[in-house]
Length: 318
Image 1 (tube, helix red, strand yellow):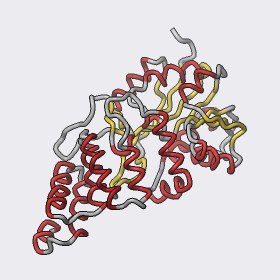
Image 2 (cartoon, rainbow, N blue to C red; image 1 turned 90 degrees about the vertical axis):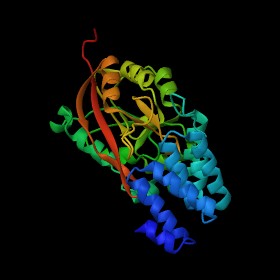
Image 3 (cartoon, one colour; image 1 turned 180 degrees about the horizontal axis):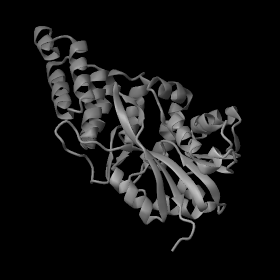
């Protein structure tokens, strides 16, 4: 119907963008790119058109082309903070095993003031899913406390807020972004907040923890082996690590992006294959206790599937 509408009203940007958006929601990214390019060729395109084109190209793994599309979007919408965020995000290198520290700090310093309201508007569910998982911890279920707790990539403190009434704590938060940490500090949920890369912080501090959490943090890592190895060192035997990742999916044509283990997607985030995460966890010396499959949030009106793991450091490492 939208295609027929475009034929009847070829000058309508709204119809063209609606058709592109529908293709994105259906994960038909090839057709989304085709429609966006048709709009560009016809001279009927705006910042939204190029932003959606960049989204589709990035998901297809065509990151250099996506970066150009995002730059075109910025030219048409220079005051749009979301478009500026996409342009910064497109600077992440697709072949890198993790997002660069400077990139993550820049993105979240600029995002901090609207971070919570934006995630809530997208139906963000990971803190609530993490709360449900932690309620099943044997000590919590028995009414006993667990602590101290390390919150990796704590951001503004949304995860700590969601689980703050459980018998957990005191909390220590670690994050790269000073502006995100400033918002977390206002909540008064943390005994300590540290501005640092999470691997560097885990390496520098030899304290062992009974519980480490990481909500929407591992999506900035492709390869997980280095992080899992240092988390293993910092967990007490029998300690839990609860973390989320975004799940990699095939597109409309059945093609799974990336290397079979992870794929760099839009906004510089990685999505992971469940089998890869499971195998990496076991190889690092953990036992998988539970895997939930929550919806992380919505993007372009479509659900973003996630994986939430509860893993335990084996009591007697062999």
